[in-house]
Amino acid sequence: MANHASADKRNRQNESRRLHNRYYAKTTRNAIRALRNTTDKEAAAALLPKVSAMIDKLAKINVIHKNKAANLKSGIAVYVNKLQ
Image (cartoon, rainbow, N blue to C red):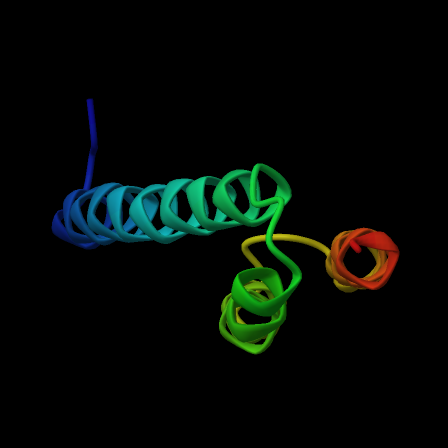
């Protein structure tokens, strides 16, 4: 229970930001999963820049850590390059 109006406002802001972050994080995870399930090199190469941009945006707004973003991008790039 908040003791001040500012604490109530902060709670409302935190909740809306949490939902916003959760939506974009889940969308990005689904995009990564879709990319990793792709076996066609051309389709995967077309998806790679879009997914990388999504990951960069999550790191930029501190939803995920920048090192995690780098590891994810590296992993999907390796996957795309290994496809035949």
